[in-house]
View 1 (cartoon, helix red, strand yellow):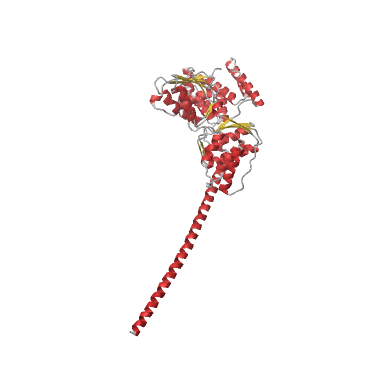
View 2: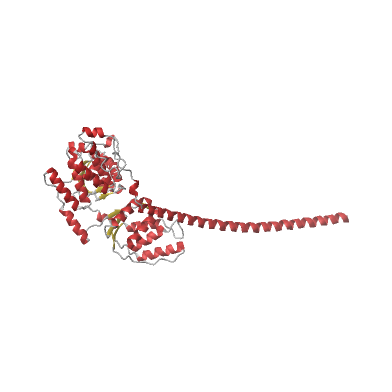
Length: 472
Protein backbone atom coordinates (compact mmCIF):
# COMPACT_ATOMS: atom_id res chain seq x y z
CA UNK A 1 0.00 0.00 0.00
CA UNK A 2 2.91 2.29 0.81
CA UNK A 3 4.39 1.84 -2.61
CA UNK A 4 1.06 2.54 -4.32
CA UNK A 5 0.48 5.57 -2.15
CA UNK A 6 3.96 6.75 -3.00
CA UNK A 7 3.26 6.37 -6.72
CA UNK A 8 -0.07 8.10 -6.20
CA UNK A 9 1.68 11.05 -4.59
CA UNK A 10 4.25 11.25 -7.35
CA UNK A 11 1.53 10.97 -9.92
CA UNK A 12 -0.38 13.71 -8.18
CA UNK A 13 2.65 15.98 -8.00
CA UNK A 14 3.41 15.41 -11.66
CA UNK A 15 -0.13 16.24 -12.65
CA UNK A 16 -0.09 19.43 -10.62
CA UNK A 17 3.22 20.45 -12.16
CA UNK A 18 1.97 19.93 -15.69
CA UNK A 19 -1.09 21.99 -14.90
CA UNK A 20 1.08 24.84 -13.68
CA UNK A 21 3.20 24.65 -16.81
CA UNK A 22 0.10 24.68 -18.96
CA UNK A 23 -1.26 27.64 -17.10
CA UNK A 24 2.05 29.45 -17.34
CA UNK A 25 2.30 28.78 -21.06
CA UNK A 26 -1.26 30.01 -21.56
CA UNK A 27 -0.53 33.22 -19.68
CA UNK A 28 2.62 33.84 -21.68
CA UNK A 29 0.73 33.03 -24.87
CA UNK A 30 -2.04 35.50 -24.04
CA UNK A 31 0.51 38.11 -23.12
CA UNK A 32 2.38 37.51 -26.35
CA UNK A 33 -0.79 37.70 -28.39
CA UNK A 34 -1.64 41.02 -26.77
CA UNK A 35 1.78 42.40 -27.73
CA UNK A 36 1.48 41.06 -31.27
CA UNK A 37 -2.04 42.47 -31.65
CA UNK A 38 -0.89 45.86 -30.39
CA UNK A 39 2.04 45.78 -32.78
CA UNK A 40 -0.22 44.81 -35.67
CA UNK A 41 -2.67 47.62 -34.86
CA UNK A 42 0.21 50.05 -34.72
CA UNK A 43 1.51 48.74 -38.01
CA UNK A 44 -1.93 49.03 -39.64
CA UNK A 45 -2.23 52.62 -38.41
CA UNK A 46 1.23 53.45 -39.71
CA UNK A 47 0.43 51.86 -43.04
CA UNK A 48 -2.81 53.83 -43.33
CA UNK A 49 -0.97 57.10 -42.64
CA UNK A 50 1.71 56.18 -45.18
CA UNK A 51 -0.99 55.26 -47.69
CA UNK A 52 -2.69 58.63 -47.15
CA UNK A 53 0.62 60.39 -47.73
CA UNK A 54 1.19 58.42 -50.93
CA UNK A 55 -2.29 59.35 -52.19
CA UNK A 56 -1.69 63.00 -51.31
CA UNK A 57 1.66 63.01 -53.12
CA UNK A 58 0.07 61.29 -56.13
CA UNK A 59 -2.67 63.93 -56.28
CA UNK A 60 -0.14 66.75 -56.03
CA UNK A 61 1.93 65.15 -58.79
CA UNK A 62 -1.20 64.91 -60.93
CA UNK A 63 -1.90 68.60 -60.43
CA UNK A 64 1.76 69.39 -61.22
CA UNK A 65 1.59 67.31 -64.39
CA UNK A 66 -1.58 69.05 -65.57
CA UNK A 67 -0.03 72.45 -64.85
CA UNK A 68 3.05 71.43 -66.84
CA UNK A 69 0.93 70.32 -69.79
CA UNK A 70 -0.92 73.64 -69.68
CA UNK A 71 2.35 75.52 -70.01
CA UNK A 72 3.53 73.52 -73.02
CA UNK A 73 2.89 74.49 -76.59
CA UNK A 74 0.17 72.02 -77.56
CA UNK A 75 -0.37 73.47 -81.02
CA UNK A 76 2.31 71.23 -82.50
CA UNK A 77 0.29 68.13 -81.61
CA UNK A 78 -2.71 69.17 -83.67
CA UNK A 79 -3.43 67.51 -86.99
CA UNK A 80 -2.49 69.62 -90.02
CA UNK A 81 -5.10 70.60 -92.58
CA UNK A 82 -5.75 67.60 -94.73
CA UNK A 83 -5.95 67.76 -98.51
CA UNK A 84 -9.25 66.43 -99.75
CA UNK A 85 -9.08 64.31 -102.91
CA UNK A 86 -11.59 66.40 -104.81
CA UNK A 87 -9.31 68.23 -107.23
CA UNK A 88 -11.30 67.03 -110.21
CA UNK A 89 -14.57 68.25 -108.74
CA UNK A 90 -13.06 71.63 -107.95
CA UNK A 91 -11.64 71.88 -111.44
CA UNK A 92 -15.13 71.34 -112.85
CA UNK A 93 -16.26 74.34 -110.81
CA UNK A 94 -13.57 76.46 -112.43
CA UNK A 95 -10.84 76.07 -109.79
CA UNK A 96 -7.27 75.44 -110.81
CA UNK A 97 -4.81 73.18 -109.00
CA UNK A 98 -3.19 76.29 -107.54
CA UNK A 99 -6.41 77.40 -105.89
CA UNK A 100 -7.41 74.32 -103.92
CA UNK A 101 -9.19 75.68 -100.83
CA UNK A 102 -7.64 73.37 -98.24
CA UNK A 103 -4.06 73.52 -99.41
CA UNK A 104 -3.45 77.15 -98.50
CA UNK A 105 -1.40 76.38 -95.39
CA UNK A 106 -0.44 72.73 -95.46
CA UNK A 107 1.59 73.04 -92.25
CA UNK A 108 -1.07 74.93 -90.33
CA UNK A 109 -3.03 73.03 -87.66
CA UNK A 110 -6.72 72.61 -88.25
CA UNK A 111 -9.71 70.79 -86.87
CA UNK A 112 -9.54 67.13 -87.84
CA UNK A 113 -13.08 66.71 -89.13
CA UNK A 114 -15.73 69.08 -90.36
CA UNK A 115 -18.49 66.59 -91.03
CA UNK A 116 -21.79 67.89 -89.64
CA UNK A 117 -23.37 65.60 -87.08
CA UNK A 118 -26.55 63.82 -88.09
CA UNK A 119 -29.90 63.96 -86.32
CA UNK A 120 -33.07 61.85 -86.51
CA UNK A 121 -35.20 62.64 -89.54
CA UNK A 122 -38.15 63.90 -87.49
CA UNK A 123 -35.90 66.67 -86.06
CA UNK A 124 -34.84 67.99 -89.46
CA UNK A 125 -37.46 70.50 -90.44
CA UNK A 126 -35.75 71.74 -93.56
CA UNK A 127 -35.60 75.48 -92.81
CA UNK A 128 -32.98 77.66 -94.49
CA UNK A 129 -30.93 80.74 -93.77
CA UNK A 130 -31.95 84.09 -95.20
CA UNK A 131 -29.15 84.44 -97.71
CA UNK A 132 -29.43 83.69 -101.43
CA UNK A 133 -29.94 79.96 -101.82
CA UNK A 134 -27.43 79.74 -104.63
CA UNK A 135 -24.75 81.48 -102.57
CA UNK A 136 -25.45 79.28 -99.56
CA UNK A 137 -25.35 76.11 -101.64
CA UNK A 138 -22.10 77.17 -103.24
CA UNK A 139 -20.51 78.16 -99.92
CA UNK A 140 -21.14 74.63 -98.67
CA UNK A 141 -19.13 73.33 -101.64
CA UNK A 142 -16.13 75.52 -100.68
CA UNK A 143 -14.58 73.64 -97.74
CA UNK A 144 -12.16 76.42 -96.82
CA UNK A 145 -15.00 78.59 -95.47
CA UNK A 146 -16.38 75.76 -93.37
CA UNK A 147 -12.88 74.90 -92.12
CA UNK A 148 -12.21 78.52 -91.16
CA UNK A 149 -15.48 78.78 -89.23
CA UNK A 150 -14.71 75.58 -87.30
CA UNK A 151 -11.14 76.69 -86.57
CA UNK A 152 -12.43 79.99 -85.23
CA UNK A 153 -15.00 78.15 -83.12
CA UNK A 154 -12.22 75.91 -81.80
CA UNK A 155 -10.20 78.92 -80.62
CA UNK A 156 -7.63 78.87 -83.45
CA UNK A 157 -8.31 82.45 -84.50
CA UNK A 158 -4.95 83.15 -86.16
CA UNK A 159 -5.15 80.05 -88.35
CA UNK A 160 -8.74 80.90 -89.32
CA UNK A 161 -7.63 84.42 -90.25
CA UNK A 162 -4.79 83.12 -92.44
CA UNK A 163 -7.12 80.73 -94.25
CA UNK A 164 -9.78 83.38 -94.89
CA UNK A 165 -7.23 86.01 -95.96
CA UNK A 166 -5.68 83.59 -98.44
CA UNK A 167 -9.10 82.49 -99.65
CA UNK A 168 -10.48 85.96 -100.43
CA UNK A 169 -7.27 87.21 -102.03
CA UNK A 170 -6.00 84.16 -103.91
CA UNK A 171 -8.90 81.77 -104.51
CA UNK A 172 -11.94 81.72 -106.75
CA UNK A 173 -14.85 81.42 -104.31
CA UNK A 174 -17.53 81.89 -106.94
CA UNK A 175 -20.94 82.75 -105.53
CA UNK A 176 -19.52 82.38 -102.00
CA UNK A 177 -17.05 85.25 -102.49
CA UNK A 178 -19.14 87.78 -100.55
CA UNK A 179 -19.58 85.32 -97.68
CA UNK A 180 -15.81 84.80 -97.45
CA UNK A 181 -15.11 88.53 -97.27
CA UNK A 182 -17.83 89.11 -94.67
CA UNK A 183 -16.47 86.26 -92.53
CA UNK A 184 -13.07 87.97 -92.49
CA UNK A 185 -14.63 91.36 -91.70
CA UNK A 186 -16.48 89.75 -88.79
CA UNK A 187 -13.30 88.13 -87.52
CA UNK A 188 -11.57 91.54 -87.41
CA UNK A 189 -14.57 93.06 -85.65
CA UNK A 190 -14.60 90.33 -83.01
CA UNK A 191 -10.84 90.50 -82.42
CA UNK A 192 -11.10 94.31 -82.39
CA UNK A 193 -8.45 94.74 -85.07
CA UNK A 194 -9.46 98.03 -86.69
CA UNK A 195 -6.21 98.41 -88.64
CA UNK A 196 -6.66 95.13 -90.53
CA UNK A 197 -10.38 95.81 -90.92
CA UNK A 198 -9.70 99.13 -92.67
CA UNK A 199 -6.95 97.59 -94.79
CA UNK A 200 -9.36 94.88 -95.89
CA UNK A 201 -11.96 97.57 -96.62
CA UNK A 202 -9.59 99.18 -99.14
CA UNK A 203 -9.01 95.82 -100.84
CA UNK A 204 -12.77 95.24 -100.92
CA UNK A 205 -13.45 98.63 -102.50
CA UNK A 206 -10.77 98.08 -105.17
CA UNK A 207 -12.04 94.59 -106.00
CA UNK A 208 -15.77 95.20 -106.07
CA UNK A 209 -15.78 98.95 -106.86
CA UNK A 210 -18.39 99.57 -104.21
CA UNK A 211 -18.47 100.99 -100.70
CA UNK A 212 -16.88 98.62 -98.15
CA UNK A 213 -18.35 97.82 -94.73
CA UNK A 214 -17.65 100.48 -92.11
CA UNK A 215 -16.01 99.95 -88.76
CA UNK A 216 -18.93 100.08 -86.27
CA UNK A 217 -19.05 103.24 -84.20
CA UNK A 218 -20.10 101.37 -81.08
CA UNK A 219 -16.85 99.38 -81.39
CA UNK A 220 -14.88 102.59 -80.80
CA UNK A 221 -17.15 103.51 -77.93
CA UNK A 222 -16.51 100.09 -76.44
CA UNK A 223 -12.77 100.65 -76.72
CA UNK A 224 -13.01 103.99 -74.94
CA UNK A 225 -15.09 102.44 -72.19
CA UNK A 226 -12.51 99.71 -71.75
CA UNK A 227 -9.82 102.30 -71.30
CA UNK A 228 -11.98 104.06 -68.73
CA UNK A 229 -12.82 100.74 -67.06
CA UNK A 230 -16.57 101.19 -67.55
CA UNK A 231 -17.33 98.04 -69.53
CA UNK A 232 -17.76 94.41 -68.59
CA UNK A 233 -14.40 92.66 -68.45
CA UNK A 234 -13.43 89.46 -70.30
CA UNK A 235 -15.56 86.68 -68.85
CA UNK A 236 -14.16 83.26 -67.93
CA UNK A 237 -17.03 80.81 -67.44
CA UNK A 238 -16.29 77.61 -65.54
CA UNK A 239 -18.09 74.35 -66.47
CA UNK A 240 -20.48 72.20 -64.43
CA UNK A 241 -17.73 70.16 -62.82
CA UNK A 242 -14.59 71.61 -61.28
CA UNK A 243 -12.10 68.84 -62.09
CA UNK A 244 -9.12 68.34 -64.39
CA UNK A 245 -11.45 69.27 -67.27
CA UNK A 246 -11.03 72.97 -66.39
CA UNK A 247 -7.58 72.98 -67.99
CA UNK A 248 -8.91 74.67 -71.16
CA UNK A 249 -10.75 77.28 -69.13
CA UNK A 250 -7.65 78.05 -67.05
CA UNK A 251 -5.52 78.31 -70.20
CA UNK A 252 -8.02 80.81 -71.58
CA UNK A 253 -7.93 82.71 -68.30
CA UNK A 254 -4.13 82.79 -68.37
CA UNK A 255 -4.15 84.10 -71.95
CA UNK A 256 -6.75 86.76 -71.10
CA UNK A 257 -4.74 87.86 -68.07
CA UNK A 258 -1.85 88.83 -70.36
CA UNK A 259 -4.10 91.27 -72.25
CA UNK A 260 -6.09 92.92 -69.47
CA UNK A 261 -5.78 93.91 -65.84
CA UNK A 262 -9.34 92.87 -65.01
CA UNK A 263 -11.07 89.50 -65.28
CA UNK A 264 -14.59 88.27 -64.62
CA UNK A 265 -14.67 84.72 -63.22
CA UNK A 266 -18.08 83.08 -63.44
CA UNK A 267 -18.59 80.01 -61.19
CA UNK A 268 -22.40 80.05 -61.39
CA UNK A 269 -22.55 76.84 -63.46
CA UNK A 270 -20.37 74.75 -61.13
CA UNK A 271 -22.34 71.88 -59.56
CA UNK A 272 -19.55 69.50 -58.47
CA UNK A 273 -15.97 69.89 -57.26
CA UNK A 274 -13.09 67.46 -56.83
CA UNK A 275 -9.61 67.80 -55.26
CA UNK A 276 -7.67 68.00 -58.54
CA UNK A 277 -9.89 70.76 -59.91
CA UNK A 278 -9.58 72.61 -56.59
CA UNK A 279 -5.79 72.39 -56.76
CA UNK A 280 -5.67 73.74 -60.33
CA UNK A 281 -8.02 76.64 -59.57
CA UNK A 282 -6.15 77.43 -56.35
CA UNK A 283 -2.84 77.87 -58.17
CA UNK A 284 -4.44 80.07 -60.83
CA UNK A 285 -6.09 82.31 -58.22
CA UNK A 286 -2.80 82.67 -56.36
CA UNK A 287 -1.10 83.71 -59.61
CA UNK A 288 -3.79 86.36 -60.18
CA UNK A 289 -3.15 87.58 -56.65
CA UNK A 290 0.56 87.93 -57.39
CA UNK A 291 -0.10 89.85 -60.60
CA UNK A 292 -2.75 91.93 -58.77
CA UNK A 293 -5.44 91.49 -61.41
CA UNK A 294 -8.76 93.07 -60.49
CA UNK A 295 -11.47 90.42 -60.29
CA UNK A 296 -15.23 90.29 -60.63
CA UNK A 297 -16.43 87.03 -59.05
CA UNK A 298 -19.78 85.53 -60.03
CA UNK A 299 -21.16 82.65 -57.96
CA UNK A 300 -18.05 82.48 -55.76
CA UNK A 301 -20.05 82.20 -52.53
CA UNK A 302 -21.99 79.22 -53.90
CA UNK A 303 -18.70 77.66 -54.98
CA UNK A 304 -17.34 78.06 -51.44
CA UNK A 305 -20.40 76.24 -50.09
CA UNK A 306 -19.95 73.37 -52.55
CA UNK A 307 -16.31 73.01 -51.50
CA UNK A 308 -17.30 73.08 -47.82
CA UNK A 309 -19.80 70.28 -48.48
CA UNK A 310 -17.04 67.81 -49.45
CA UNK A 311 -14.89 68.59 -46.38
CA UNK A 312 -15.07 67.07 -42.92
CA UNK A 313 -13.25 68.34 -39.84
CA UNK A 314 -10.67 65.80 -38.66
CA UNK A 315 -10.70 63.81 -41.92
CA UNK A 316 -7.50 64.12 -43.92
CA UNK A 317 -8.34 63.69 -47.57
CA UNK A 318 -5.94 62.99 -50.40
CA UNK A 319 -4.86 66.62 -50.60
CA UNK A 320 -5.26 69.89 -48.73
CA UNK A 321 -6.24 71.71 -51.94
CA UNK A 322 -10.03 71.95 -51.28
CA UNK A 323 -9.39 73.43 -47.81
CA UNK A 324 -6.87 75.93 -49.16
CA UNK A 325 -9.14 76.90 -52.08
CA UNK A 326 -12.00 77.49 -49.64
CA UNK A 327 -9.76 79.78 -47.56
CA UNK A 328 -8.56 81.59 -50.70
CA UNK A 329 -12.12 82.28 -51.91
CA UNK A 330 -13.23 83.50 -48.48
CA UNK A 331 -10.29 85.93 -48.46
CA UNK A 332 -11.13 87.20 -51.94
CA UNK A 333 -14.73 87.75 -50.82
CA UNK A 334 -13.54 89.60 -47.69
CA UNK A 335 -15.42 87.10 -45.47
CA UNK A 336 -13.05 87.35 -42.52
CA UNK A 337 -15.28 85.67 -39.90
CA UNK A 338 -16.03 82.72 -42.17
CA UNK A 339 -12.34 82.52 -43.04
CA UNK A 340 -11.31 82.32 -39.37
CA UNK A 341 -13.84 79.58 -38.65
CA UNK A 342 -12.67 77.56 -41.67
CA UNK A 343 -9.00 78.12 -40.78
CA UNK A 344 -9.58 76.66 -37.29
CA UNK A 345 -11.23 73.58 -38.83
CA UNK A 346 -8.29 73.30 -41.22
CA UNK A 347 -5.86 73.64 -38.29
CA UNK A 348 -7.62 70.85 -36.35
CA UNK A 349 -7.72 68.56 -39.36
CA UNK A 350 -4.09 68.86 -40.41
CA UNK A 351 -2.54 69.75 -37.02
CA UNK A 352 -0.92 72.93 -38.28
CA UNK A 353 -0.97 76.55 -37.23
CA UNK A 354 -4.08 78.34 -38.52
CA UNK A 355 -3.36 80.66 -41.47
CA UNK A 356 -3.98 84.35 -40.91
CA UNK A 357 -6.47 86.39 -42.93
CA UNK A 358 -4.86 88.52 -45.66
CA UNK A 359 -7.18 90.94 -47.43
CA UNK A 360 -6.54 91.00 -51.21
CA UNK A 361 -4.48 93.96 -52.41
CA UNK A 362 -6.29 94.13 -55.75
CA UNK A 363 -9.88 95.20 -56.34
CA UNK A 364 -12.29 92.26 -55.98
CA UNK A 365 -16.04 92.61 -56.50
CA UNK A 366 -18.82 90.05 -56.58
CA UNK A 367 -21.96 89.90 -58.68
CA UNK A 368 -25.03 87.73 -59.11
CA UNK A 369 -25.46 85.89 -62.42
CA UNK A 370 -29.18 86.59 -62.60
CA UNK A 371 -28.46 90.34 -62.55
CA UNK A 372 -25.74 90.10 -65.17
CA UNK A 373 -27.85 88.01 -67.56
CA UNK A 374 -31.10 89.93 -67.17
CA UNK A 375 -32.90 90.67 -70.44
CA UNK A 376 -35.97 92.44 -69.10
CA UNK A 377 -35.69 95.15 -71.77
CA UNK A 378 -36.17 92.63 -74.58
CA UNK A 379 -39.57 91.96 -76.13
CA UNK A 380 -41.31 88.95 -74.63
CA UNK A 381 -40.77 86.84 -77.76
CA UNK A 382 -36.98 87.36 -77.83
CA UNK A 383 -34.10 85.64 -76.05
CA UNK A 384 -30.71 87.36 -75.86
CA UNK A 385 -27.70 85.13 -76.48
CA UNK A 386 -24.50 85.84 -74.50
CA UNK A 387 -21.32 87.07 -76.20
CA UNK A 388 -19.67 83.63 -76.08
CA UNK A 389 -21.31 80.20 -75.90
CA UNK A 390 -19.01 77.50 -74.53
CA UNK A 391 -19.42 73.80 -73.76
CA UNK A 392 -21.82 72.89 -70.98
CA UNK A 393 -24.86 74.62 -72.48
CA UNK A 394 -27.50 72.81 -70.40
CA UNK A 395 -28.40 75.94 -68.38
CA UNK A 396 -28.66 77.95 -71.62
CA UNK A 397 -30.88 75.29 -73.25
CA UNK A 398 -33.08 75.26 -70.16
CA UNK A 399 -33.53 79.04 -70.32
CA UNK A 400 -34.34 78.89 -74.04
CA UNK A 401 -36.86 76.08 -73.46
CA UNK A 402 -38.60 78.08 -70.73
CA UNK A 403 -38.81 81.11 -73.01
CA UNK A 404 -40.01 79.02 -75.96
CA UNK A 405 -42.79 77.43 -73.88
CA UNK A 406 -44.81 80.67 -74.03
CA UNK A 407 -44.77 81.40 -77.78
CA UNK A 408 -44.99 79.52 -81.02
CA UNK A 409 -41.87 81.19 -82.52
CA UNK A 410 -38.96 82.11 -80.29
CA UNK A 411 -36.60 84.75 -81.68
CA UNK A 412 -33.05 84.29 -80.42
CA UNK A 413 -31.24 87.63 -80.61
CA UNK A 414 -27.57 87.07 -81.56
CA UNK A 415 -26.59 90.73 -81.89
CA UNK A 416 -24.14 90.34 -78.98
CA UNK A 417 -23.04 86.81 -79.91
CA UNK A 418 -19.45 86.74 -81.14
CA UNK A 419 -18.44 83.11 -80.97
CA UNK A 420 -19.90 79.65 -80.36
CA UNK A 421 -17.41 76.99 -79.30
CA UNK A 422 -17.32 74.00 -81.65
CA UNK A 423 -18.44 71.43 -79.06
CA UNK A 424 -21.13 73.85 -77.84
CA UNK A 425 -22.62 74.04 -81.34
CA UNK A 426 -23.19 70.28 -81.28
CA UNK A 427 -24.76 70.56 -77.82
CA UNK A 428 -27.02 73.37 -79.09
CA UNK A 429 -28.19 71.20 -81.96
CA UNK A 430 -29.10 68.25 -79.74
CA UNK A 431 -30.62 70.55 -77.10
CA UNK A 432 -32.79 72.69 -79.39
CA UNK A 433 -34.01 69.87 -81.63
CA UNK A 434 -36.52 68.49 -79.07
CA UNK A 435 -37.93 72.01 -78.59
CA UNK A 436 -38.71 72.59 -82.27
CA UNK A 437 -39.93 69.00 -82.73
CA UNK A 438 -43.07 69.89 -80.76
CA UNK A 439 -46.09 70.86 -82.89
CA UNK A 440 -46.35 74.59 -83.58
CA UNK A 441 -42.89 75.43 -82.17
CA UNK A 442 -40.09 77.11 -84.12
CA UNK A 443 -36.87 79.01 -83.44
CA UNK A 444 -35.35 81.88 -85.37
CA UNK A 445 -31.77 83.12 -84.90
CA UNK A 446 -31.48 86.83 -85.77
CA UNK A 447 -28.47 89.14 -86.20
CA UNK A 448 -26.06 86.21 -86.60
CA UNK A 449 -22.52 87.03 -87.72
CA UNK A 450 -21.09 85.22 -90.75
CA UNK A 451 -18.62 83.06 -88.80
CA UNK A 452 -21.35 81.71 -86.53
CA UNK A 453 -23.72 81.30 -89.49
CA UNK A 454 -21.19 79.14 -91.35
CA UNK A 455 -20.61 77.06 -88.21
CA UNK A 456 -24.37 76.60 -87.72
CA UNK A 457 -24.71 75.50 -91.34
CA UNK A 458 -21.84 73.03 -91.03
CA UNK A 459 -23.30 71.53 -87.84
CA UNK A 460 -26.85 71.30 -89.17
CA UNK A 461 -28.59 73.96 -87.06
CA UNK A 462 -29.97 75.46 -90.26
CA UNK A 463 -32.17 72.34 -90.47
CA UNK A 464 -33.94 72.93 -87.15
CA UNK A 465 -34.09 76.75 -87.03
CA UNK A 466 -34.13 79.70 -89.42
CA UNK A 467 -31.04 81.92 -89.42
CA UNK A 468 -31.05 85.61 -90.23
CA UNK A 469 -27.68 87.27 -90.83
CA UNK A 470 -26.65 90.52 -89.20
CA UNK A 471 -27.25 93.73 -91.12
CA UNK A 472 -24.19 95.31 -92.73
